[in-house]
Structure formats: C-alpha cells, structure tokens
Image 1 (cartoon, rainbow, N blue to C red):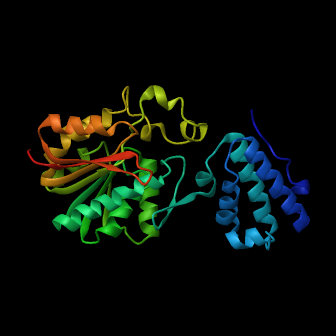
Image 2: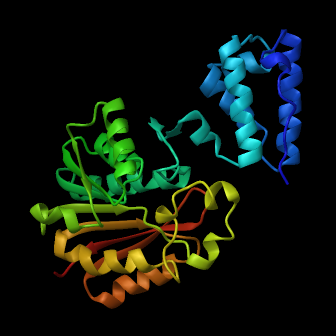
Image 3: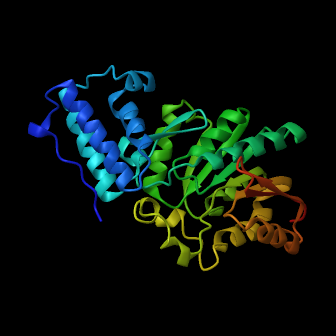
Length: 302
C-alpha cells in the first residue's frame, strides 16, 4: 500500500503554520508506512540545512524552492520507498560525508569497524605502508577510510561498476584523497597484476546475502540498492570463496585479509580459511552490537 501525504497547497508553504502542519502530516504518514519519522528530520537537515536544535525549537522558515523540494522528496520516500540517503544524495560514514546514488550500496555504520581493525593490525605489525586494496569499493567509503587511517599507504580500490567508480572518485576528490587512491574497473583482484604478491592488506565488504534471501529484504534495500552488491550466490559465500582462494597470490606472506560477513556466516568463513591451509591467525570480530561480523586472517602460504 502506498502512503501519501497531501500535496502542498499552491506548491508552497504560505505560512510557517502551514509548514508545521505539513511536517506533522509527514511524520504521521511515516509512522503509518513503518518508516522511522526521524528520517524526515535528517532530510530537513541535509536538504534545507536545518539543524536539530532549530527544528526542535521550531525556529525555521524554508524558502519556496526548498519547500517544493522537501515535499517532492518526502513523497518519494513514502511512495517509492527510496532511502533518504539517495534522496539527499549523500550520507555520513565515520567522519566522511559521502555522495551516494542508487549505483552504490549505502555504507552502514557496522562496516566502519573494518577500518579500525585494519588500523589495529597495522599498529601491531607496523604494516601501515605499502599496498592496501579495497575490493568492491562501491562509494569508496572503505578506500577513503583506509587512506585517512593509513596515510603512508597506497590504496587500490576495485569495482566492477563504472557508475560506482565514478561516485567513488567524486568522494575521493571531495576529501582531497585522490592522490592516495587508485581506482580500477574489474573483478576483484584481476586489475591488480602490477602489485601481485606485494599487497600488505586486503579489505572487502563483498556481497554475502544468499540469493533466495535477497527477495525477503526490505523494499528500500531489495528494490533500490544495487543487486550486484547484495547477492552472494546460493549460500551467500560465492565471493568470499573466491577471495579466500585468490588472495594468497596477491598478498605478501604475512599480508592481512579481512572481510565483512552476514550474521551467522563467521564460523563457516573461519573454517573455510583454516581448511584452505593458506592462512594463519584466523580471528572472528564482533561489531558494536556483539554480532560476529568480520573475519580476519594472515596469509601464511602462497
């Protein structure tokens, strides 16, 4: 069922009272559509530049052009289930404001810990220089996070999608990191022959949702985010198997391997790493909610 709020009379808010009437209608429509009403506040902040305190104190008066845009965007959120990040064209991840479009997966807060785990590894081993790779870079979030955390490293970011790489490059330019990151279009390690056997660390958030489960996702994810970044094959582990098998040919001995996995997959991935005989120091790490979200290992044999 589509939930829709009444359009703004004559296309504009004719008074501040009318704006707040629209705001309350919009919040109630969100609740009816099972959408967090705080998303409306987030959109107001991003599109109209209204900070949270001004919103709480109701000390705002959007201009006509912003009023029209707000109404149009919120209609799309309610009726088309488009995520607010795509509607605003950006999101915040760690300390980075990133451009996002439906060509890229929206970076999630739990993925931020991949950067912390990579940094912890470098702090222990002094491996903060050399070649680091982000496979399946999407918006470039992980690559940018690595570049900021490891300023002495060279970052190589790979994605199959030309559209995603265009967004990632814009994000690198936005944060002045374009000289530290090289972008490649291709499948996983394939474009990286020039650094074969020299990679100090590989970080990836690959597709890991089983094909049958993709259809059960919320419409905001299933219908709006790129299927390429979601569908991990029949058991969700297709890409991860590939990364386990191929990484030792590209990583140096002692190179760091870390991926994000789906809830419940970590023990299986750890077993796969152990069974390959190519890795040591296999570890499972939890996210901030206590969910086993990441698997890391060290390449021990090539």
